[in-house]
Length: 448
Image (cartoon, rainbow, N blue to C red; front, top):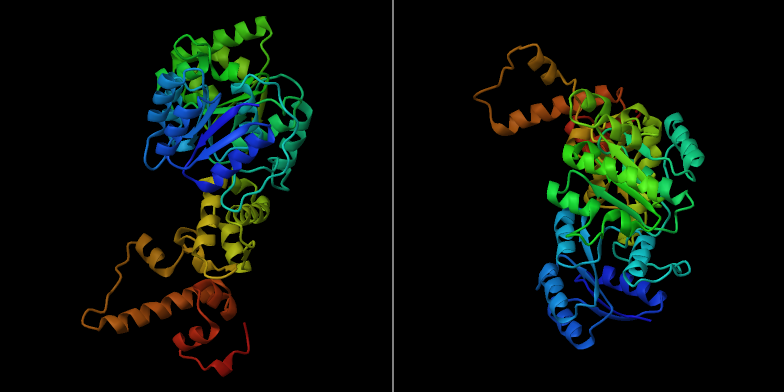
């Protein structure tokens, strides 16, 4: 049993990390402020410190520095968000053993704690729950019924237990990180750590230190993986001199029998980068033994409805509230939109709609305007044909707004093939309000 001090100003995360440590048999001292945490550190001299990078009263880096000076034997794990990974890697130079990015998997946290304390893996974690934005404890899974997703799922099953390096290729936001984690969880390495790093998120110096060790400490991302999987994301951003070092390191690791699975990913075509002298051809052949292409969302629209339901389910779990349903016309908008940002953009739109909706059902009015706007309106057509649009100068603003409102309602009616119920839902108004604005009697609601 080890003494563990945890400092995090987010109560739900603090409690969850405490539960994980207690389930491993450790004595936990949880603190929500940096001042309390520093006082506890001075009193206990713990074997392990887990500290958030951003705490209200004290910067996490300052806590690491003070812990290093007062309790040098304490192992330190930094907790951070993805946007602060560069600062977390900098913390490694100050003496942190490792870092973990929010939202994290419970298994990753458990394995990082065990590694920091020099212990062998413990039995599986009991199920834990948190009512406020907990990290995911469910195994990652691919969502979709398209032929492309089924093909990727089949490929993962075939290569999961090999050690062949995998290269994931696809546009930004298609789910490369998820596929890398699914591949890890499907392999015999699933009980070992999964470590991921965005090559574009770090300066060249920090990226080099993270890959090959900090100040000759040999505490690199590969050694901290301990037989697990390393995912180097956006590898096309890796500088040429680091590519050369990685190429040599992989040769050395093969000869020495080092145990880790390498997965790389890119949103650019590496063969083009090779032709332009921006990527090493010999490194490309090492990392692309199993190439996997992930098509953009616009090429697999049959997956969108399932992805929406999955996002709504995850949102409900994080918020601790009932799962919201989506009105069919709103779902139709989401399925017609081209999604240049792929799943990342879809997730953003659905989560925004959950926040904007006033009840348990997401309406078209709750969606981002770019998703619901119609690109072939009369005004847009006139503008594209360079036709002048006459404005009724001299009329009142109210009368102009009423005219434009009617035009917009008529365009929406045309879009919906005359369906008034569908138009009312799309505009976010009641059917009675629609009839009033159309200057029709409510009694005439006989067709849709």
